[in-house]
Length: 292
Ligand SMILES: [Zn+2]
Image (cartoon, rainbow, N blue to C red):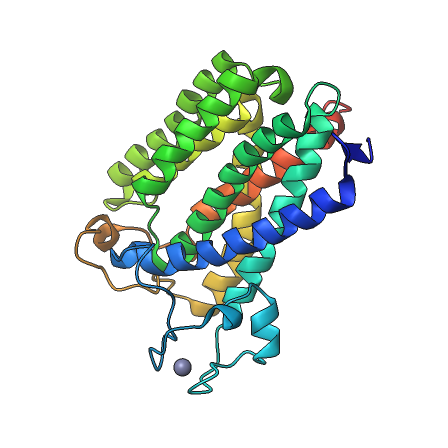
């Protein structure tokens, strides 16, 4: 791996994408909080959830402000959820991982601008997965306004950069369809057998997004990893709670929630987890699997 690109040292690139990633993580917090409420994600600026005091820029620096404020609102001292700095930190870590991935697949051919484009596509995918994960955890709902652009990003990445991602446009197209199909079938079957939804339409779109980005080759791993890791979390939870109704109240406009599942956890976050594992460790995973 070269230690500079177009004369820019690697450490400066790393610092830049860490800061960018944390900033996008901060924006992810806004989207996660406001999108399900149908509120604008650009206006107004952030405010304390308790006392509604607008947050000044110097109290809004990702991760750092949380630590300086000791996790409390400057005005009303109400505790700020640890989720905010954690998501900012996740944004930073994912962003750095995307840079390393971009360098890994592209350093022989790409200049600085090329790397930036690769980083942007990878990070857009990760950013959407991050936001989808936390909205689904809280609301059991995957917004179409996130997964549909996600499908477009996946297809575009591989149409434009398929040589580098080693996912051809055809692999991506097949991945999109082959990702959606099994989940859609499970959804239909589950509904026939149990009389209520076990999989949301959002899960169908999310798998289409994952297939479009990672290609159909990734799908068996993503589904298997999502199911196993989902069960590892869901089984202890449902034993503890016995009746494991989702923690939400049905909301207007999200009618599917009223009939939806008796599972202990939503599936979307685990699809996202499996997809990230394949994106960053796919080569190692494939090498390991093909040994057997
Ligand atoms: Zn406050």
